[in-house]
Length: 321
Length: 319
Image (cartoon, rainbow over all chains, first blue to last red; front, side, top):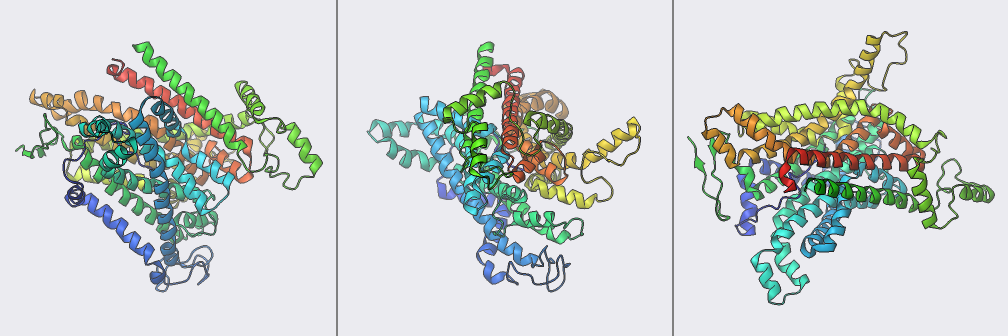
């Protein structure tokens, strides 16, 4: 239903490799990362090439209401006789747009709060973390419902609402990481040499956060798309925009289930699930590769690795049998 | 030390609750237009009626005075009157909560059992077919939009299980067992949906907590002592893996609320989630405000409980 990172307060070990190499290693060493990246890539291509792929114009009636799948309409027709395949293609644009735009909002707010909190500490930290605590415990969907209902339905509002309520995880995770980076020797040395706070943050702290931010960002996209689907289902998204969430909403409201028109409900849900699972697989792989503790398990008999006891350098795997 | 930890948690919860109450006040005052112009019942009220309503709701007074008034009424348990059915919001909420709790509780208990079993299997049989299958299933289930999963179950169980409401209104003189069976069968689909949509995320968290524990040196020691796999798992790994999982459950509560709202909407379950949905449709702001406040405060309280439980589970944190 929704996705949480393992523990928001645990600082992850910094990669010892150069960033470029780490990225490639993360993707290619894990089949789940390859799968996730492939799914996301596919949907992005479909969204970008939409106008050329779309077999029928949308929104427009091109056949009977809830017409069943046929050779001309591979996934049938929806509640107003629109072609489901065309709607799915068009819907991918809005859903992905909302996912990425809301992610950007959440990342900017969350990273700023997290960096300020972890870097400056003290009173700033206390105030910001109290605020984050509030945002962590509030049931976010009701709040989104309230704000979306008050502001009125529009795509911009949906993006803002989702983004402004998703930054909390980013803030907590970034803060934990920044707190540990801040104490590292090179940061203290930079400060001692007279570097300002701005320069220190931009040149020395932010680059260290890179891979972590990528992984949180990808997971945020998944959460944002889930939230859009939920808001659209409750009728709070922009009714004129065609999105996967809106398709499920329309089908449910107009009795697709009791009419037996499963083709109007199943495909948009499958698309949402695929994108969310894709984000999850990729994000989780990156996160896992940043947290070396997850790689060790003494109980799994096949092979286990001995955890390094000194230093950050990984010890080569030891085959147990 | 012990009392200090508990005190700190209590203060933190109180501050969060205060922030929640204050933001709840601000949020609804920040509505464009006054509450009166947003009353769906009087969209084009005459100036006289409008003024009378504004005075009645105390909206002509300064904001801080409204705030003090709001806090005072809240302290007395007054959440206002619903625009929709003219009943006190608190009474409406109590009814809705009575409907929601059993269904959500059943779903959550089922989700916890399912998550524990699959996570233990996955972590124990790491990198085998069992692990891939159970982790894969967990990821797929946590990726399903909750309401869509509900619709899928609705299609699958159409005609077998009742699809909406809490009970069959056409039962004539039902016996105790008949009534219980009727209620349970109505609860089946909503609870199952909630359980399936919640378990995946929990299983993934629990699995990685277990894996982290299994990497600890004391697990290796226990294994070296000659303990069986099951013994290591039960006596050393499971207990310690409970710790991070408990924290996550606290943070997971917000998701449970989300799931409940979506599930109740699909199955027309007259609980808190449905109340929120209906309040949005009717622009019933007092109801919406009351429901939102109740949900937020209950999550704050449950988090406090989890925190205290955590202390019980892991005495080290006080040191």
